[in-house]
Length: 337
Ligand code: ACO
Image (tube, protein in one colour):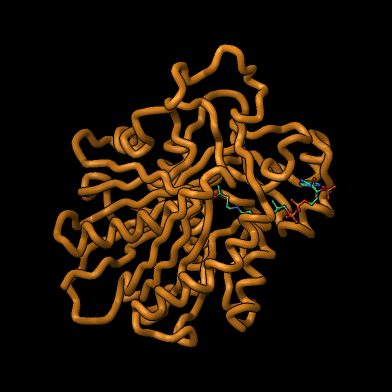
């Protein structure tokens, strides 16, 4: 049977570093508060001049992933793009990326699952490969948050955590008897609490999606979040979904070499480690440098973990997990061939 094998990864962040001290000048916050409550020290935002969309960041990350895989764009037979901040309302960033790669008929699919977009994308890629629908897939997570944040004190809980960035993974269906590739995936969603983390406007459900009587400064045009509720949900649901994916893969936690959680808050990931009784070196953190890059966060961390040789040798097992808007949460276990 074909297994879904990672052949190359890549990442890209825009050059503009925004430190916590830079944010202190924009809104009422402090480096101390941000570091203590989230672990974040800096994030990257696109330059405000010119136009840079999620597909532009994804394109840069994809070029690196393709090079590392030894592929050209022409080798691809499927593209999956995970983002909550598509370049434009439609068409999706996957199509825009496909054109930037110089392609004109390769299928491209957008996934709108926020922080778990990469996990949903990886499970989808695995299903496409195992069913024979695709053989060489480019899976990208990319976000441009900075152009849509409320940079006043009103939006400080969210604005200080989000960063821009993209990461890409080349996945190939390879015939092997070895127990390798995507070993299991467990995905969930609960739309009943969608309003705990959302951007409400523009809304196609309204007679006019940009209501004329609502000024563009209205909070509904910006992401809003019930941070403490999401935090509690993450600490409760992530251990459960991790156990579900372990059971599906028929392996135990001690066989996992590294857990790469979505980088939403260092405290969530530390609490996860304590709950699972794991040493902190078994959990990957890079939120300090990038903040929460949402759909890009897990593949960006995966790329860095491979570059740092924390993971990637034949037989290494990595567990990817996260919870975010939707709400959605999930866990995928991957074993290197
Ligand atoms: N700077 C200074 N003070 C702040 C800031 C800030 N940036 N943001 C909030 N505060 C204040 C609040 O106003 C509040 O003040 P008060 O006590 O006077 O009312 C105080 O700090 C505490 O606020 P909380 O919201 O309770 O702070 P908390 O410790 O929960 O941290 C945070 C907030 C960082 C947002 C946290 O709740 C969190 O990380 N939640 C989970 C986020 C998450 O996982 N999201 C999902 C992924 S993102 C996605 O899917 C798109």
